[in-house]
Amino acid sequence: MTPVLHISGIEKGYHSLRPLRLQLLSISPGERVAVSGFDAAAAEVLVNLVTGASLPDRGEVRVMGRLTSDISGGDEWLASLDRFGIVSPRGVLLESATVEQNLAMPFTLEIDPVPPGIASKVSALARESGIQREGQGDDWLQRIAGETPPDVRARIHVARAIALDPALLILEHPTITLSQDARAAFISDVVAVTDARKLATLVITQDDEVARAMAARALRLEPATGTLKPAKRGWFR
Image (cartoon, rainbow, N blue to C red):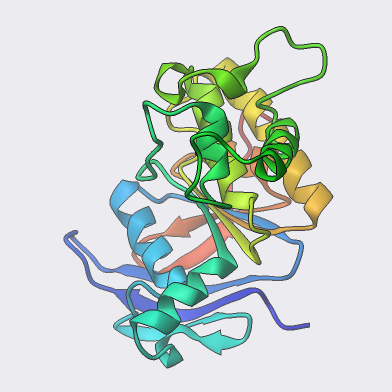
């Protein structure tokens, strides 16, 4: 079975004391893997390498069996981004638009109003990602996105990332804005979504505890060598 993502022997220099090194990381279809030990800058470099936004100085990155270095031209690279769903602190919301309008963005640019056919997809996404729950009094879909609490905002990013059925979901420091109590519920929802969709998932974090809670295979980076070893146990498990 061809891995969704296969990284081998990569090295990438960036503005840090040492380059990012990663000896081996492979993710199979439907597998959820977390890698910890990445600060914000290193996580951004890794995401860019996985998506082909940048190329390694050494080594190779393959997505669905194809080298990212074989992507030729900007148009082909932009088209290749459809394979990824990305949740990142660098992602932006339309702060003055409603949650419904934000969730409609992957499907259409006509969001005022959201077309009825798209609205039904948005409603399903909101339920799947935990934004709307059965019996819940609050209708978050009609709230202004900029006025929602951090846990709802985090779920908006997840819902948008899975909207177009990506081959690989990438979660970059997904819990960084959440309190400890909110983290547990958010992680539970993400695990449920990825399990139900059998979605290959890469979680990039600085926290061993989050890594272990979010993934069946939790690994920690040794920056000097680029080796990934099992993450230590934390309070989640």
